Amino acid sequence: MAVTRTPTTIVDANRDHGRADGTRAVVALSATGPALPSPSPSHEHVVADEAGGALVREISRAAGNRAAAAWVQRQERPGVGQPDEDLGKARESGRWTDVAKILNGMPDAQLRDRVAPGVLPPAERDRLRAAIPDWAHRVRGAVLTLDYNEAVAARDWQKAAVTVNGFDDAGIRDRMAALDPAVVTDFYNGAAAAMSGVSLTRVLNGLRDRYQQTTSEPLGTRTMTVVSMMRAAGVDASVALSYVRLKLGIVPASAGEKENQSVEDVAQDLSRALSAVMTQPPQLLAGNLAHSLIGGVYVAANAPWAFYDLPVLAYAAQLANRFKATGTTKDLLMNLDMRPDIVDLARLEVYEIKPASSRALAVAEMREYIDLMDGILKQSVFRPGNRWNPGATGALPFTDQGKDGVLVWGCPVPGAILYRFLPKEEEPSAQRARQALHEPESEYEASVAAAAAVAVPLVIVGAGALAALAEYEALMTMLGTALRFAGQALPRVAGAAAAGAR
Picture (cartoon, helix red, strand yellow):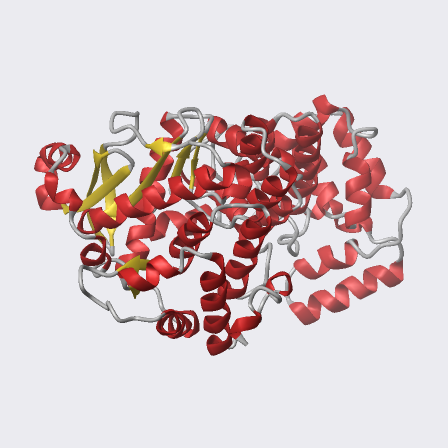
């Protein structure tokens, strides 16, 4: 089960060295950063000659600490010398903490050579790993790299996930970015099966960052690129409009509102939204933490084929193979930068998570996601998430903007998970509040526009303009005009189709 993600916990996550036994290192260290304390005094004689020794003394006097000695030790010329003799004796006598200290004083290349599989057998590497001091992060980094690479090569995804959690956040991101796209889903499943809480969150954040870094295109440019690919793949224009609505926050106006709005009016409204620089308010940040907790609970309860807040790209290969998608559809899935809150591939169900005040928006977005996915796959595939799946309702301790309390959530209509935060004084009534939130009510059919007003800034579009945008020519023209007004580049693949927007 996932644990509550409070700001304090997230800070601790950056200090988590993810040991296999589940314990946490005391000191926050990077696997690739500068070394901390030098080895024990018994190993300070490793400098090769008197000139080097004099240099150590001079730097030590200037710096006033033993870290300078450790730095000079790692600059010694390569070759067999006293450190290797000491290393051999420590290995023979089983003094593995001393082995780690000696290795930590060696240059990086020598350190990697001496822990390589052909030099240090797996059984000895296990003993070394268990004895590495908290401060010897260079040695831990070298050992973790070997462990991780071997686990990936063996396709042992649970071990790979546990191992990668031992790196700092930058190390996790680098390794997630380097994963073969074909194994991302397997890695995700391995992580969900092997860990929970802060450790799982760190690994999943690394996977999400992988997709956030895939393109430097502005939001409008990227959206128009995908719409162009949909058109080329023969996807119905109404499906492309669903994508645009989800991606750019377009919602239909209430009855009679904006009835004279033109397509160009929509473009101007959209351009202002694309140009706006928005700061995330504290209540939205708290909402993201609530999303993560609820999504993590659902994934843990429905592993291995439930996904939370991952782009379609993460499981596009499974979808394409399962539903025999053609080449153009496969390309489209790999470029579809959408992130449904929860996708349960075992049951082919979708959920959207929203605060209770945005219940109608949750229903609308969930249906948009289903229409989008079914339209791309050109068959009826997904349905709203079942109200009674494990994890669709629950209550857990939570901290909202520094105030302790309880997060309760339920699924009053299929596919819409809604949540509320109860302050600590209301904790005794948490289960009753959860049950009430889970009960279906007719008020969940409230207008999307009214619910949107309390959620996030959106572009409101009248019924006539929205109907016109269900054709590719009008949709592409509107997007091209909005990009031009917002100062964002037109994608090259859409150039001809968007000529009317110039």
